[in-house]
Length: 308
Ligand code: GLV
Image 1 (tube, helix red, strand yellow):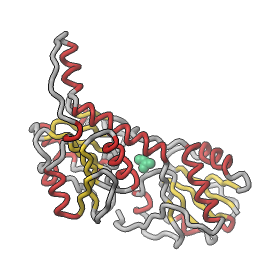
Image 2 (cartoon, protein in one colour; image 1 turned 45 degrees about the vertical axis):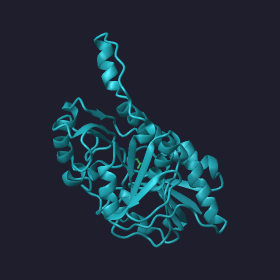
Image 3 (cartoon, protein in one colour; image 1 turned 90 degrees about the vertical axis):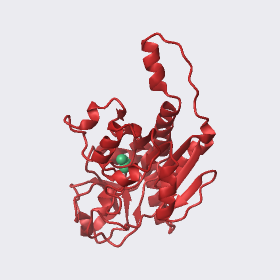
Image 4 (tube, helix red, strand yellow; image 1 turned 90 degrees about the horizontal axis):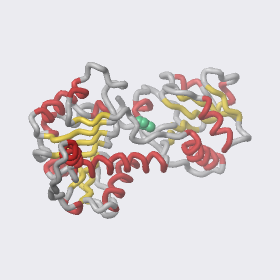
């Protein structure tokens, strides 16, 4: 019994080493050095070459080693085995902290105080009350839900939107087309947590973004292509959207020629809002493998729906 491991966009060896620490009894083969395809029972992958996962006749499960599932949605055919998402508590923590940081930055107008301090100018301004400051997370997957709960715990008016109805403790939940209109019109900060798939490419287009109240802010931590960049730039330039904190982009790294670099009201970070650490993530992955070996269900299982 063996594991195929492939972190296609980065280094695989640190993952293989970390996983070996939790599953010392299993052989771990780093792709493409797979001595015998028949031995592979688990594939632990990130952006694996298209179609290759069909080559392992004894595969029991595919376990993903990051949060996004867009690379899985790009596969036209996958073996008929469970696909297991990675829900890594440290990624949830980091991403919610990233959101909180920018929410507070915008709510409390720290940029203005920075400019005042540069001019040695002492003046206090009123801050909107947190419990009236509406922060809306669109996308209520595992990360979106976690962030909404953290925002509520920190005293913000936390709102969430998903396609179908969901209940999240202490969060005002909206769903469906009508719910989207309502939440967009009532957001001081909009946080994009939607996955990228066929249904969400350019989902946040000019029409939707212009429904946000004038002076609102946007935070994007999922995938750049969910946003229509041109629409966002126009709304930032007209002042309709006051600020954008962007961690993800349609093309990464962000091109030096991107218009986003030119804007004072755009805060660019290089896809760092939540880092996946092999030692922490491999514990979660190893526990799911142990669960399958014990005849239990791994979780959470992913059902590809809207292929890219
Ligand atoms: C990073 O963006 C991830 O999906 O893990």
